[in-house]
Image (cartoon, rainbow, N blue to C red; front, side, top):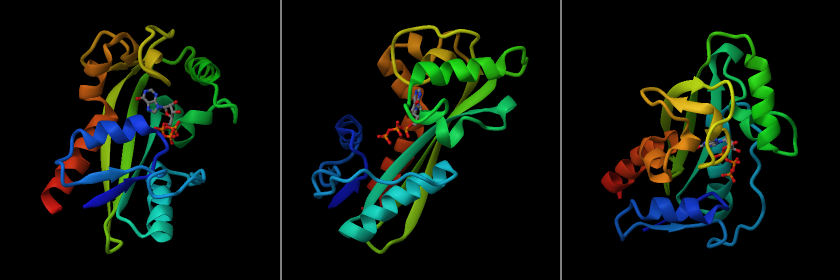
Length: 193
Ligand code: ITT
């Protein structure tokens, strides 16, 4: 049984393959001969992850899944959300993104936020299922910590005293939004294939 993970990040493929039984083999975009960059121009995480999986399913005729993640800040009506990677512009500069976010929150008491990942899976018959992973938390006043990536230095998960960037990678990866969505997908695949 072969399933494509519509990502160009080989680390993401390896991480999920290790969680699956041996008879389910994950293929990367490169493995199926898809070398183009997949469009993600929808207005929601659900839309973007569906857009990527759907493109691969229709053009390469393999069961596949794709993910999309965003940081949603309550006092900013869910921004940066689906545009998290390019919040401060197309240069995708995370330093500028974090600075912009902190400046918009300046003086605001409500710092609640959540990371949200949506995975869309399409089976061989074209049937679609979505899996969501959410981690609630709060935005700090300043970046702290050097681990992780993206907005990790300014996000403290609920129930913890440290930012994601101050945690060891395996600690973050056990509780993260991506881990939660991925575990739901793995459970589904293991049960249905
Ligand atoms: P791919 O589509 O190539 O996987 P991407 O940058 O679009 O790369 P995501 O959709 O997973 O990656 O995430 C969008 C942005 O959200 C990403 O650029 C980061 O800034 C941020 N982000 C995602 N996951 C994060 C995490 O675990 N910790 C901190 N920031 C994260």
